[in-house]
Image 1 (cartoon, rainbow, N blue to C red):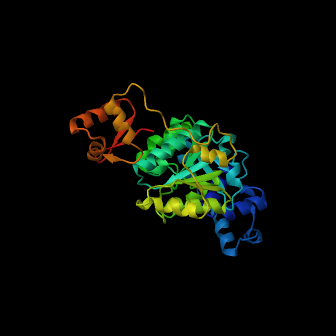
Image 2: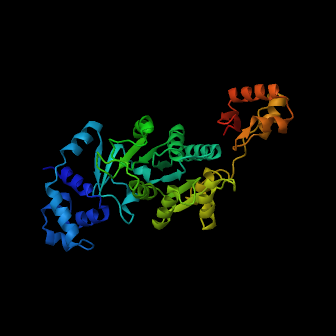
Image 3: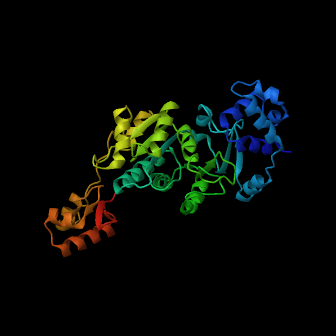
Length: 359
């Protein structure tokens, strides 16, 4: 029986804090399962009932989990492994095992978590893309949960910035969720890591995602919340980050948007208001050349119509009819101008026949 098998058995019970306590007390997974129920129950916070559950796990087969890990070419990083993430090890209840696709590097300790709603606005997407890309270009690893919406944009931003990114799943590595992100997860594993504390075969049950969130914050030096309702999952991550002694950052948004409630509430409670990557860099003590980059200048070779249109665009979607009214252009001229600006990479069309200024 290999030691890896016993580490997998410790993970299967999904009692990370108690599993770590036992591994620390006895010196490893093999030693845990060599102990008697009475010996296990002598460890702090381990009741007789819990000790009996761990003791019974010694006979639990793990052939399916081993086969799945081999098929995925995944690594098993135990709590006592020197490659275990240092930031995570310092938290209150770190996972006893991490199942990993890709590679965990020492420099990944310089990480920022980015989380938010699964249904972001164009403003939220744009801000996440710009800030995530800027942080990645400065050498920070971007951590998120690979969920739809802000999480997905954060990972893509890190990849586009040429940086590293870590995705933490709320399911087994062999059950990627959401399924449409399986291609993205492959890219993340090639440029960082995809990890889970859950053994292969674990389904993405709803209750596991709040549990997963403590890893997103635990791996990070600070967590940025981009658009979240007051009771959203991102707010759980922010609370966990504060409990773990991590910085909490938030991006303000339009007051009439429900997903601005979460970040605004965090800011009221003392979270750092973030308008750009430099706000986070300053908080982390990383030197920046300027406190606020200037808005990209308008090219000199634009026509008067193009210049007029680009000046009324921002990160909030603006309907074509509104653009026509503000610019006092005919519909034909406005539409052709917007098309040319889009071709020049200065504007971007979004759902609802609206446009935003490209970041």
